[in-house]
Amino acid sequence: MTYGTVTKDEIAIFRSITDPERVSTGESVIELHSKDESFHKRCKPEVVIFPKSSEEISKILKVANERGIPVTPWGAGTSLEGNPLPCMGGIVMDMQEMNRILEEREGDFQVVVEPGVVYKDLNKKFSKKGLFFPPDPGASATIGGMVANNASGIQTLKYGATKDYVMRLEVVLPTGEIINVGSNAVKSSSGYDLCRLFTGSEGTLGVITQITLRLAPLPLHFTAVLVNFNSVEDATQSIYQIMCTGIVPAALEFLDTNVIEAINLYKDTNLEEKPTLFMEFHGSNEAGLKEELSLIEEISISNKCSLYEAGIGRQERDRLWEARYDTFESMKNANKGMEIIIIDTAVPLSKYPKMVDFARNEAISKGIKGYIFGHAGSGNLHMGLIKDPKDAEQAERGMEANDAIVRCAIDLGGTATGEHGVGIGKRKFMAHEHGPSLEVMKRIKTLLDPNGIMNPGKVFF
Ligand SMILES: Cc1cc2nc3c(=O)[nH]c(=O)nc-3n(C[C@H](O)[C@H](O)[C@H](O)COP(=O)(O)OP(=O)(O)OC[C@H]3O[C@@H](n4cnc5c(N)ncnc54)[C@H](O)[C@@H]3O)c2cc1C
Image (cartoon, rainbow, N blue to C red; front, side, top):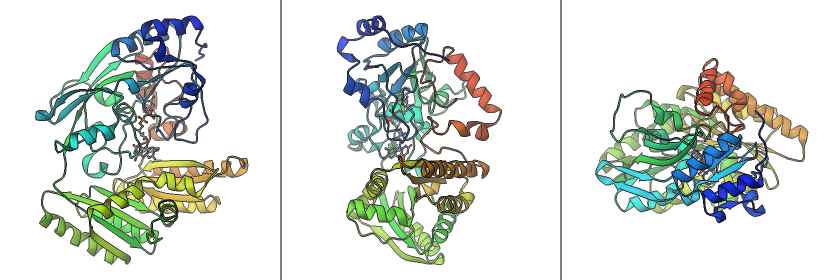
C-alpha cells in the first residue's frame, strides 16, 4: 500500500471540520507524537488532530479514507512496542480532548467514559465510592489506549485484563460509520463478540470513541509479602507451587537480582539483592488471609527462601509497589545512553521456570545484560535487554536474543506478547504464533478497513 502526503487543501478541510487550533502541524506537536516509550525509531506524522466528538472523527475518517491518508489513534503514547507510532506518516489522532466521564452507573458497577480518560484519574474518583478499574499498567495510560492494547498489569492475576472489563464500545469505522457493540448485561450469547474484536486491535480497525467499563469493588482487607531466594530456580519453583495451591494472589511479581540492584540505585532503597517475589493478597476477612499466608510461607521455606516477610504495613507495601512500578525507570537510570528491548512473553504456568531459565541463559550466551521481572503469577515474563545504539554488532546480538526468547515462549505454548501488544516489534512472530489463522485476521482487517488507512504498518507487515 502506498500513501500520499497530506496536502494544504486537506489540512484546510480538517480545520473546517474541527476548530483550526485543534489541527496542528507545529514542530513540537509533531515531535511529541513521533515517539512512544519503546526503542523503536521515531516516525513523524504530517499533522496531529485533537478531535472532540465522534461526529468530528467520522467526518475526518471519511476524508482520510477517500484520499488514502493514514490515521493513527494516540492515547498517552506510553506503549512499549511502537503501537501508536505513525510509521506511514499521515494523521495522528490524539484523543486527549475526549476525556469526559459520561455516565456513572454505580448501581450496575459500570461507568461510561470517553477514551482520553486516564485510568489513574478514574480510579482516584471511584475509590471514594469503593470501586475501581483493576487492570493497572503502571504508566499514565488512557482508557482508550488500554482497550486498544488490551492492557493488563500487576493485579490481572486476580482481577483479569482490560478485555474482562469492556462491556460496550462506540467505534468509528474508517468509512465514517459510527457503530455500537456489546451490551450492558453481564452475560450475553448474542452473535459474534465484536467488543472483544476491537479490544486489542491497536487502532487498526477503527477509532474507539466511547467505552462502558465494568468496575470491581475495592478489597476490604489486603496483605503484602516479600520473599528472597538464593537462586532464580528456587524462586520460580515457588511461583509454580503457590499457583498450584488454588490461592489466587492479587499480585505475584518476580524480580531478579539485576532488577533489585537497579531499583536500589534509582530509589535509594536497601532491598536485599537476590531473586525476589513481591506478593499481595486480597480478601474479605483477615482470618482467611492469615490461612493463605501460612501456606505461602510453607512453600517459600520448602524452597529455601533466605527471607520471608509477611503482613507488611500499608506504608511499606506502597513503597514496595512504587519500587516495582519504577522498574523501567530504574533500568534506564542504570544504563544511561543505552536502548532497552523490553520482552513481554507469557507462557503456561508450568513452563514458567523453564522460560525464565531459557531467557537468562540466552542473554548470558549472547553477552547481553538482561533484567528479568514480570507478572509471574500470570506466566508473564518481562526482560529488559540492554543494547548500545552505537554498537551495531551488539545491537544485533540483542535482537537475536530477543527473537530466540520470544520463539521459545511460543514453542512452550505461550505468546509473543502478554500485554504490550504487537505494534511494530512483534509482527515478525505473528505467523509463528498464529499459523493459518493469521490469514483470517488479515481478512477481518481488509473487511473493516479496505483502504488500509487505520494505523498501517502495525500488527501485520
Ligand atoms: C513504565 C511502563 C510500564 C508499563 N507497564 C505495562 C503493564 O504492566 N501492562 C501493560 O499492559 N502495559 C504496560 N505498559 C505499556 C502501556 O502503558 C500500555 O500498553 C497502555 O495501555 C498504553 O496506553 P496509552 O494511553 O499510552 O496508549 P498509546 O500508547 O497512545 O496507544 C496504544 C495503542 O492504542 C491505539 N489507540 C489509542 N487510543 C485509541 C482509540 N481511542 N481508539 C483506537 N485505538 C486507540 C494506538 O493507535 C496504539 O496502537 C507500560 C508502559 C510503561 C512506559
